[in-house]
Structures are given as C-alpha cells and as structure tokens.
Length: 245
Length: 307
Image (tube, each protein chain N blue to C red):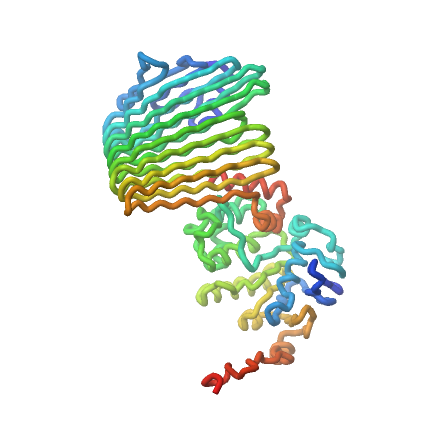
C-alpha cells in the first residue's frame, strides 16, 4: 500500500505545483488519478517514483517512510513507473530493456507473454532498438511492458498509458490492467483521462490546481467528475457557431 | 606462438581455439607464427616488403580467413603490408585484429597497412578488433591504414572495434567505389585515461549508384581525446550517409569534423553528428528499473558501442 501524506512541491521559481495532497493507493485496487492538464498529476507520479523530491510531506510504502529514498532504492523495493514520454536509447534493444527490468535473462516465452500484454509480437520486436525507429505507439507500449516485466512490484504507476496507443491495442491494454489487478495484487495507480480506464477503476482521485478536488469510490466520483469545471469561453464569442458576428 | 599471443588471440576473436578453422596467418612480433592456406584462399608472403598477399578465388562462398597480428613486448615497431585480392563473385569473411602488449617502459607498436581489391560482385565482411594489454608504462600504439578499391556491384562491410588499452591510435581509411558498389563501415572506439584516438575516413563515390554508410560510435572517458574526420565525395549519382555519435564521460574530449563534397547534382549526401554526455533521462529510466547510477551508465555505454 502506498500512502501520500500532505505532499507539497514547489518549483525553484517558487510556484507551488502540489498543495497539500494526501491519498492512499491500496493493494489489489486500481486507483485512477484524473483532472485537467497542468493540475499536477505527472508531478505526483514523479514524486512517487523519486524523480522529484517533495518540499513537504511524507510518502509511505507499506507503512515505511520512503520520502528520502532515491529512484533506485524505490525501484528495488517495488515501485514501478511508466513514463508518459518514453525514453529512447541508442543500441539498447527491447530484449535488453525487458531483461534489465526483470533483473534476469528472459526466455522467449516470457518475452512473448509480457509483450503480448501490450499487444506486441515478441518475434518482431525483441531485437529492435528502443530508439526513434519505433513509432510513438510502439515505444509507449514497450515502456509499459518494461514496467510489467518488473519482478516483486508492490506499486505500479502508469502516466497516461493510453497516449499514442491506437484503439485496437487499447482494448488489450485495458485487459492487461484488469488482469494485473486480479492476479497480482499490486497497488495500481494510473494517471489517465480515458473514460474506459476510469471505468475499470476502483477509486478515482480528481486533481486540479495542485489540490485534490474529490476522491472516492468510482461509482460515487464518476457521475460528478466534471462538477466544478468551468468551460473556457472565448471572450470575443469566436467559439459560437458561425463565429463572431 | 608465445602465451601472450595466445591470450591476445583469444580476446581478438571468439573463433580462436588454439588455431582457426579455415585459412589463417598469425603474425607475432613481425614474424609468422602459423599459416594455413585452403583450396580457395591462398596466403603468400610478399617478397619486396613485409606482409602478405591473400588471394581469394572467384566464386568462393562462406569461407573465413583470419589475419591477426600481435606485438607481445616493448621495443617492437611492427610494420606490415597486407593485400587482399577478392575474386569476382566471392562472398567471404575476413577477420583481422591486432593486440599490442608491453610489460616494461618500451613502446609496442603495430602499423598494419591493408589494401582490399574487391572484384565485380564480390562481398566481404571485414571484422577487426584492436586491444592493448600489459602493465608496462611503454606506449601501446596501433596505426592502421586501410585502402579499399571496390569494383562494380561489390560490397565491403567493415566492422571495427577498439575498446581499451591502446594509448594512441591513428586510423586512416580510404575507399574508391565503382558503379553500384556499397561500403558499410561500423566503427566503435572507447578511450580512457590519457589515451588518444584519431580516425580519418575518405570515401570517393565514383560509380553511378554507389553508396556509403559510415557509422562511428565512440566513448571518451577519463582525460582521453578523440578526433574524427570524414570526407565523403559524391562525384556522380550516389548516396552517402555518415553518422558520428560520441558520448563524453568525465573529462573526455571529442572533436568531430565531418565533410561532404557533392560534385554532381544527383549526389545525395547526409551527415549526422551528436556529441554529449549520456542523456540524463536514459539514466533515470534505467534507475526506475532498479539499476544504480553506475550500472545504468555502464549498460547505456555497452549498448551504445554495440549498436
């Protein structure tokens, strides 16, 4: 179980991105964080994975304070993190990335199974470089696979996994998340705007302007998701049908 | 052959098992330490200068010839001229490589001057590894010169590696290509400490539809320094691509000077170059998979030099 207590995070410029955020990600449940762009969702994911250090507050993993742990220490102790923008390498193949993630050599069958979860055929991909020759959707799926390949994960964080993935593979991805939830019992945290991901959530947290606007059971939150959201209107009325008269 | 040669040969090629399968010539401190010709590949000593003529019969397929050279102690300045005559339609692998070793303060040096004459339609995969070993303070130097002449429809793939231990190297490669000939070069160099490596390519695309793909990957660690210069001359309808990527670690420095000459309106030439430290996001990604900073850097460099 992952707990965030009173997390605050400021940029060097003094701008406060996260303003006293507290929530829990329980084991075996899928928690989805959603909310408008620029609200602090990716910052939260980075703080959980250790890429950024909060200015105040605590992060607890199974009750243990991990706030001061670095990225490697958190990863070794079970925190997995799939980047929103996958990193590209020169000379590191899909096979290498998956084996580094698993911490051991993988059989072709094991690679088939992990790549299959993100809708890719191992034979076509394992010897390809994780570089710019992969399309946006392919590199995104390999990024997710690298997190699924981790052993002994306790918390898995996915930052907008749907971005860049085509409709056909998306169904497979939803299935993969559902399977993860049922079989493995990790605490799953997905940052997403996608209705179908919100649909399979157990809990939903809405973050806006660096604060939690609401959080709770999916059935309770989903119907009132857009409450409090004001539409952006053009002051000149150019957004009206037919444009400005 | 002596024990040092034995261990250098083991590093230079995985195919070495005390001897080689196929044709070979082992050069040890300017002397011949073993040779075998086959029906299709004849190795002969030159009479006018130190070195070999290697004749590969037209149509020879699937054979490998090994031409390694070792310098196993200081105070050796080895110079060798090897000419490879590859017959029409042959398709072979040539494994060269050089190991220099010194345990004292005297210099160990090897200069290999290789010329490749590829006849029409032939294909050669040339694999070369350079290594320096030994605890001596004497400089370990390797200065190879390669000149390649590719007749029409021939293909030369050069895969060259210098990973560690060579204090100073100056590598000079030139090639002239006929119609539809292709030259593919993959060079990988890693330097550390005070080592210096300089590499200079000059490729003349003289035949219609000839092409070159020149890829150099290098890592400069410690206080080492590398120089890269390439000149591709497109003198007709042709394609040329060069790519020079370098990673700096510590106080390593790299100077890259690519040059393209288009002497014909249908010459299509491209150069790409990137020099810098390891991208921070690559290290972070591998750390999120549980690797330490050091291990992440090691894996990134390992992949970079393999690719």
